[in-house]
Length: 390
Image (cartoon, rainbow, N blue to C red; front, side, top):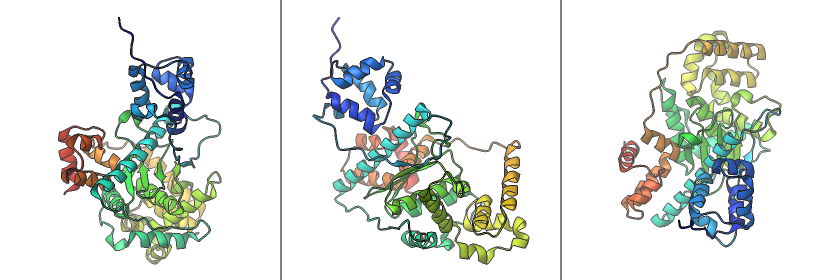
């Protein structure tokens, strides 16, 4: 029987991809590859070589192409977001969840690079993302800059009781400014728990990227989008798992607290809230106020707490009431989301429109268009196209 062909790769690059690009511990990577750690270590120091079949498995696990391992030396450092997550001190990070999160970050980087390449082929200049704020300025002034950058007017908010319509509005508003807004991976084996990550951003230009976790509620995703946009304006790529409810937690660093304050002011401006609020009839008015700002009633209560208009006792009593309500049996009305819709959400509408433009201008082939959407079939491409053209 013929021996398997050995892959004459660069050991230094193999190690770099694991450590710097996908950020996996050697033991965990070996376990996923179903080999002994000693064998992987031997491949990385060059005393042994993997077969080409083994290399393909490595490339799949590391979310890269086999060709990268044949480079003569390691590429430039992979720019990784700062980890601002609030994790329990008593627990070590889940390696499986860490891998899934890291794989999503790599996917987001690759999507951004592909979009830059598409614009080069189209010979179009990428849009300039000009918003910039200083962490030392007031959160109100920073919120004003964000609002002006987005050209946001609350009168344009959809008047609807469906929070998904509001989510779509905010996605489109942010993407109109040249910022990609995506969901985490469409691949279910890379699904990230909400406690692990609510969202992250890549604050590089052109085409900064915001990625949100679809396991979050629509209003939660809206808050994350604006929160991450503040980080982009600060010029810092980050990973986070906190929401507005954690705004006063001592475990949050000052940057996260600042971004939460700014996001809250963008979504529910203080002046506008105080103009329409009547504390005497607050309990009855909450649904209408929520609809006015297209945020949850809890967000309204949090804003009033932050503005010292209600007591902590009243706020936490309201949260307990919500918690008790959600403990009751709920009618499961969730409809399964079609695969092509999940593909579009994971890629973002801006990215999708750009990819289809490149295809119809004969800059990329149908196979390359498919590759831009997780190598999906032609039938899903047609359905994606129908969604972005309606």
